[in-house]
Length: 276
Image (cartoon, rainbow, N blue to C red; front, side, top):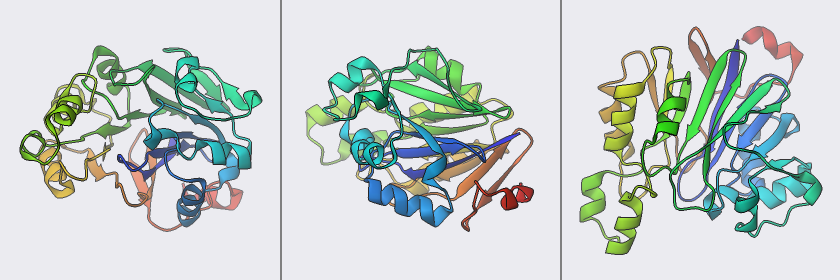
């Protein structure tokens, strides 16, 4: 009745999210190097051997730059749309490339991964909800607006990685050129703190235990500020910042509550299952 999850990295410098049970797991995006992915998972006590698939949200470099090396080393299948791989320049063995279709769940062992379309300035962008053991975890980053797909799937989740990319005043008054400010704040850019907060306040289900604020801008946001903003409205939901510099602890998400672990835990080992 639970899933384990961590953000290995979240930001414009690289995105990679882990969701799994005690026997199999998936990575959503592979935007940090193979070596860094291995190092961070090892620190957390996570084993690459139980990663059974990588799902790619879109072709931007901060979501795919580690994919080739991970796939070549571990022979992990990559689930990606045909349009995204055409525009990605990824060189992956065709036997390991798997397509997915919007709103059609993909089974990975006892996990179910539901892709759905989102608004972003990429060829065929998708977000995902990973479900198993009566728990659902969403990965909703790189979205320009909270469209109906995002809202519908947000309501299903026990935990969500939700983009809170920028503070509107910091972006407006910051050093970015006008064209970049326009791109970020457009309906196909990134979600602001205010937009993310509106989604959270209006559509958070009562059973959501964790909200991971994700893909924060280095220049146009402040982790302490955005955490304080959301915490004022969180109720029983724990607010966590998904760092752009390091992995989060592994969180154990259940339908009845939650735990998290700051020390490495061997999730694939039968001797550890009694901990949960």
